[in-house]
Length: 363
Image (cartoon, rainbow, N blue to C red; front, top):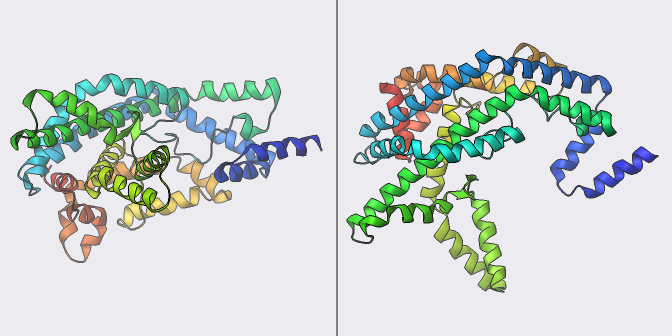
């Protein structure tokens, strides 16, 4: 009865439907399943804590960063935008050094919390949350805290990968954004709408267009919330409030802005080999996506997949990139569907996406 009262109190405190569902799921877990989850987490921890894993991730991310930036620069020559995309890549490379301090700070916080702002929630590629947490184990008091602390202590390998993931994503996001704003400012200077010496001030003032508190990408929902908040501050109601919100959204969110941020997010996922797998993008990627579904199903098959194939997204993305130079076939009728992602990118309205795809064909 005491346990039921405690659980009822927890339910009253939960206002998020997702958290509520998670609590109910945990409450139905058997002891054997909880220990199986703990074993699986330990297995992932030991694999990811190996120096070879950390070193391979570092080298892979660094090489992939240079490769992807080169693709954009070379492919940009064929993007049909007068070389703007190539210059964007060159400016990004110049801005990388200045982006390192911010990226390092963000990566340290991400590693400490095992969760980044621009990166993955976790670099585990494992199912579920932290299996050693008091919430997951159900252990209480000092013993529960000791088990949770032990889990945190053993997770230094995954934390190292979260650090790397956040570092590269944050560094390139800031460098690419500054490159975009530099190009935008240069256009204003050419039209006589801005002075030459105010570039830094312009970039500083416009960074909030892309980021929330400089930590994560801004979304359409963020802009909508801002609009509603400002309408309330001005005590607007009814049609006045609706008109204000619509105008604010039009002035602060556009398809171009959305496309630019989607490209930067995808670039960060690509250089860390963490692009989401899709069932519509070729046989190999589709097979990986189906295998992920099986692993996430939560049944006996899920544990078998986690044991024998602990990582799916990362290796599929690595081999997918190796096949980039064969994506010339993407434009051939019939067999082109095997390179469905490349074909989609080659047809994109975003010149930076087209440049990446064209660059992979060449490089």
